[in-house]
Length: 423
Image (cartoon, rainbow, N blue to C red; front, side):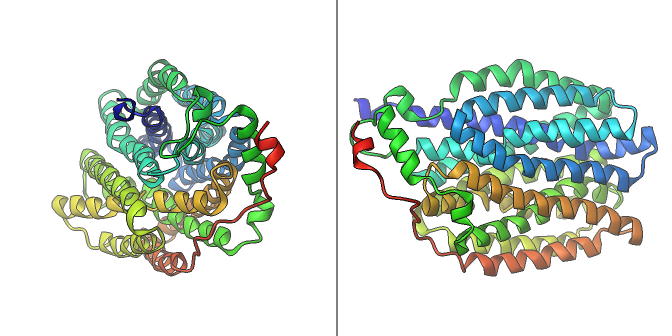
């Protein structure tokens, strides 16, 4: 009878999914606010793109530190503190009147909050709670980021059209603090051992606190040790391309691009909703695929298809073709996350995921920041996003080749000390 009960690991995954939905969705609303802010304040597209670039860069820069804190304090504390900061930043955004204020709120405060409640911290929780079905679990959690587009972006757009961008920022920030934060704080736990359980799929008795500490000390691979291995650099390189082609290019500039090609704000937001829905399908399917056929080949396919879809975007001509493109791009927008994170956990161990994923995610955000700023400058120089989209497509093809070079072989930092493990 016990084996038929829902393992608490899945409840934890649900809470992590909700966290990623809220944090990624709220941070991504800045793309919806670009045109209204531009109209109200008269700021240039380049100035607003710089705010997005600062946000994306800091979102990645905080990742390694958040991951390290999660390893030491436990990811639950980091997530709760980060969601609080994100909600406060969203509320403050509603009251900005100068560019420095915009950079401080949307560019810094919200980025720090979203960075602490991002994929690397969530993946740290999932890796600790799952021994098997890790790809599927990470797929569900990463699907929360997709659901953020599906739920939060259209909601933000509706409030902008009905009441203005300031009201949208205010109430979304309040909603995060009042509704999401308490639920996440209640449900997330750092490790299954805190509840006297083994990770999902693991056999044997639950480890004692001393045994968990010994396993963590023996199995943790530091960033300096990981940097001496080729898989780490390949994972960072491919995730750099992931950020460049997704969050930085499409996440920041798709809506302005669509609006300037005679699509309405609601049509563009609906396309993002389609993309978000297909993200969920693609990400969960990616996790399922990783658990069954491996991780390298699916990862390569995802990047190759992404490159093709970016070229197709240049030829979108009406609403049905726009939604078809959104569905195609959405299938692999976040599908790279399960194979990348699962490769990290399988190669470097479950207690290394927090910090190493933080550095890998940092490379993602560096790529995204470069793309966000570069696309804005390209638009101002040429009046078109075309050259920027082509550059992203070419990088997608490059990442496909790099993915096939990754060797999935476990790397141990040091041997487990038997005495400590049996204390």
